[in-house]
Image (cartoon, rainbow, N blue to C red):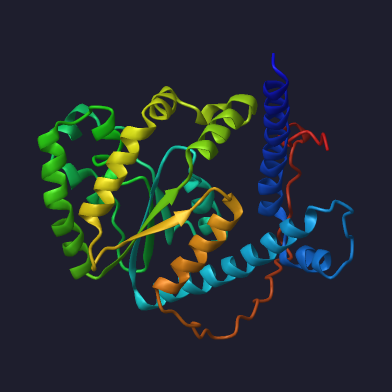
Length: 308
């Protein structure tokens, strides 16, 4: 092994370790509340890690944007809006990460994630858009598509799951389909998450080395890695032929996952004008006590063991 190769391998191992640590940060942010964050930012309970400040800024902005997302959700329900957000991009581009941060604090009955599997034999014989239509939002709902009908312009085209005529029919039809959605009152926002060749390679290495994330690395992912250039050509054709004034594409630079999340959420908030929803003050009713009520003991065998 050459000295340069050894240096490269050690650098890769260090980056993989850092990425694994970042995955713990992601779980930490799921639990950390605003009060805890404020104390950290005010200098209380300050960690000595020099890199913590960046994470603190990220958490601060993430929570601020998530509070705005809750306001947006309330406005969508109040005004009975219908919102569709499409997330597309290469494998490991970070689509799932930003979707998780968007829905993290929202009501799952309002904000729903749709990630459809490969079509069944029956669905392959249907009108192409048919299996997506049932998942479109009703009034007061937000639907986030983790991949969408644009599978035809991407994975299906590159992997040979459809014919050239199918692709041409899609490009001819999708602008009219999306125009009908918009004319029906749906707010449609489309994001493409863009990462470099080197960054995707690194993230795949991360999935190989991290047992918690190995499930994300499918045979299709490996094949997509081999066909990087074919995916690039397919993406360029898709953006050129389906970027329309009524349904434009927005590209998110996603090599930096944290910045990509914050930038995407901030942009999404800017696409839908919203305001506070006025509510009547909430008063907690007094608990009713019945003198003849006796609480029966619960058998110890029903309890989950207290291991922690």
